[in-house]
Image 1 (cartoon, chains in turn red, yellow, orange, green):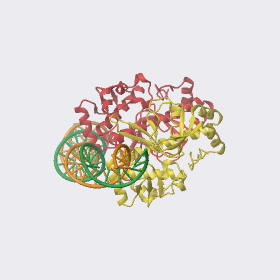
Image 2 (cartoon, chains in turn cyan, red, purple, brown):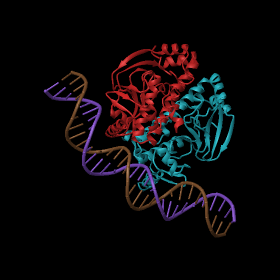
Image 3 (cartoon, protein in one colour):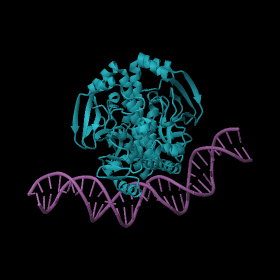
Image 4 (tube, chains in turn orange, green, blue, purple):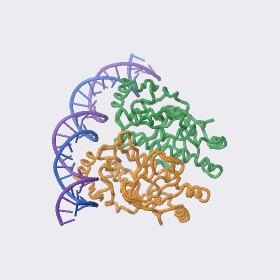
Amino acid sequence: MFTERFLRDRRGVDLEPAERAMLEDAIAEVKTVGPRQIIVRAGERIEQSTLLIEGFMSRYIDDRRGLRQLVAVHVPGDFVDLHSYPLKILDHDVATMTAATVAIVPHTALDRIKTDMPSLIDKLWFATLIDAAIHRAWLFRLGRLDALGRVAHFLSETNARLISAGLSDGRRFALGLTQNDLAEICGLTSVHVNRIMRQLREERLCTFRSSLVEIPDPERLARRGEFDPAYLYITPALAPGEASKAQR
Amino acid sequence: MFTERFLRDRRGVDLEPAERAMLEDAIAEVKTVGPRQIIVRAGERIEQSTLLIEGFMSRYIDDRRGLRQLVAVHVPGDFVDLHSYPLKILDHDVATMTAATVAIVPHTALDRIKTDMPSLIDKLWFATLIDAAIHRAWLFRLGRLDALGRVAHFLSETNARLISAGLSDGRRFALGLTQNDLAEICGLTSVHVNRIMRQLREERLCTFRSSLVEIPDPERLARRGEFDPAYLYITPALAPGEASKAQR
DNA sequence: CGAACGTTTGAGATGACTCAAGCGTTGTGG
DNA sequence: CCACAACGCTTGAGTCATCTCAAACGTTCG
């Protein structure tokens, strides 16, 4: 069941069994990809989308001097470039961060879903809008948080998303990113991220060693990063940091 | 024709006359709203969306201390909170910046479109994805540009969008924003925006006095802000800054 | 005329950057 | 099995962009 994590635990839009089966049928191929492989390049016309089954992927925009800004990090269960179905041409690259397993869904298969099971298309639209909501949370992070807050916010968000994917117990999860990746996510330099990681460690907010993130007190980390998980549309009981809203 | 500017000059998805008529029929009410009025609050359940006909609107997220980050600025023709149709609850506020004229489209009317004219729903989905593409350009702006670049990028983007709306001649346009608005857009303080505006003026990149933006050389401003309009999906001939890509 | 609001300027503080070097792991070929 | 290359992490010193705080200066409008 390759699609089992897609839209899992999302408020009001869990997939019906028939919808899940339909989506499963839309998969043309499942394959593994090495780390740091580019899957889609900005400006190319594409006719298929990628559902991430295992591993981490990113979407990013490079500037003129080669500096990179990540605009999304994807966890298992994410329909990484579903938005290329209506758009056809993307404004950014799509790549793996770690080794990954992906399912390829041809756009022609999505056309078939559109006629045969419109309720599923509604949920696909919904999924692209959650993606946009995450973009907005990232805008808040970059525009209004200091370096420590940005990293705290990102790790809190990733923790919340991995919990719904069944890949975090709420305090520990595997995250195969480098400090340079974190820098490209948070709009910082890798040198400064290094100093921030030390500070997070010293303040007992979070550790990150050999691809393992440990968060002793997720609530406190969420507060430091002003993280409120509402925008992820996760079933309420499952979202860490939910309580922080009340504590404002 | 209240919808005349919606998706105008967008690559491959201009509305057919029948679609435009259908959308026009979906409008329940057209009204004027004063400046700085909140239209939707984060977390509220909503049953209608707002199409902006005249004026400027914003979407924003406030932090704990009251600092505000704008996540979108809307120009006439934008379907401001179309994403609330699938989402029902938004993660941010929606407000007018200037006095505005808006058309109210009940979600029940969009339900009717879904069954009667699915091709139009496809284009509405597309519209929400352009919105997301703009979010990504803003992420790049906040994460990788310096203060001058951020303002230059924003003004170049706004110029491009107003050209398709028929509200800029490519070098001059009305923009009823304060320097504090620019600060909340660009993740800066209003004091610093003020110094940046002076620098833009001194370098003859741009002036902004009494709500009028003048850009003597749009190409040069776009280059300084690393602005490439591809993400707006505007019909190629109409996009200023398009040539800057070649000049890299 | 005065209040409200937005703009402008100055001085000083600070968070993040740049450049540079050293350190620790991991994987690989001699 | 060792040596070394590659890569990522860590640290230091100095610089710079942006922020903070504070005050003054237009405009606009009632």
